[in-house]
Image 1 (cartoon, each protein chain N blue to C red):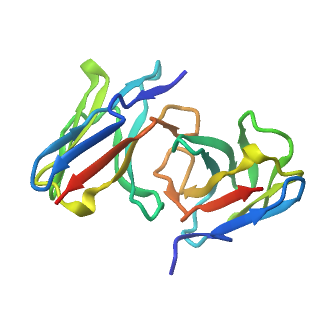
Image 2: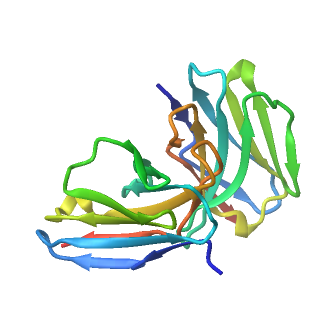
Length: 113
Length: 112
């Protein structure tokens, strides 16, 4: 069975602070994919990143970076110099041979100006 | 040039009614999905179709019936609506079953 845990339910930061959103996953499969999605207040789900289990390289995209560590089954997401537009619910998700995404419960990030 | 579209965006209806939500993708993807997001924002897969064939049918009441007339469309029909069906329903599509899923804008269903 697959499971994704996002222990942080809500986080508030002041604009320009860095913030890390945690994601811990469980799967018995050796081949799997990890995702992050953003859900802004408008409600749509926006794809941010997909990472396969064989690629542990960290990824940076502008102010966003992701740290994948198989040893701790974690796929954490860091936003550098946060902005008000980053306020959203962020979901971590896992796909592991079941043709479906298993989502975490989401972390609501509020960036205060 | 919306990639995954859903209609309607909002749906308010009475208990016991039957309603449908339509989903279309213009990405040329082979796989489409329906997810339900409850009031606590929890997202859960309901159905998945690959090349018009049902491949995932999670434990949902049989009042929910997906229909895929072609690869670009996956509609969701709900019979005898109940209060607990109130949620946001998201359609998604991916090139294949393990690829990135792209989501539609969601349909907020409110059952009164």
